[in-house]
Image (cartoon, rainbow, N blue to C red):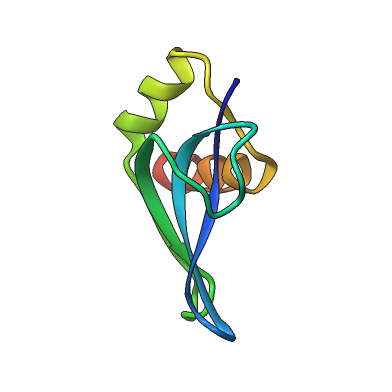
Length: 82
């Protein structure tokens, strides 16, 4: 099964994350299929950049977002609608 989840990158004590599509059995920082965005929790407010068209395409293909990624998608949708 494919998952859309976070992949940790960045320096020690300064994490940033890539939002990637991976096989669910892959390691957290292992190989990934596609890069669909990034998340930087160290900025104020946290920076979230997502490629909505790529995410929707992967969801149509059967990829399941992880809990944190699903919250990011929902929060961005609320900002766009409101």
